[in-house]
Amino acid sequence: MTDNLSNGSPCSGPDCEKALENLYLFLDQEMDTASCAEIQTHIDECTSCLSEYDLERVVKSLVSRSCSEVAPQPLREKVLMSIRTVQVTITEQRSG
Image (cartoon, rainbow, N blue to C red; front, side, top):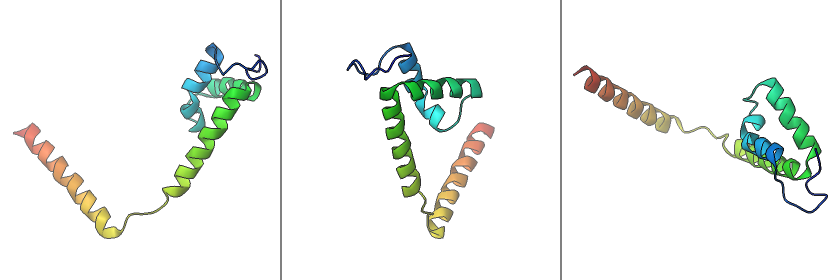
């Protein structure tokens, strides 16, 4: 594989397309080991894909840290009650 930035062209080609299409699965470790290894190898060799990977990894980390708050108990209870109400309504509609 070649470094796509060395010739000034943007990331492209079938290896880059596959890496970028599967980037979120790769970041979340939701793909098989062989596919992960293939994507990792490509990212290690392709500066453009590495940059995209780094950006997405940082964004994912920031979002994860920002979403660590827990909803107040009264709000949680209200949401759970709403979910149960919808479930009962759906069950009654299917039964009736």
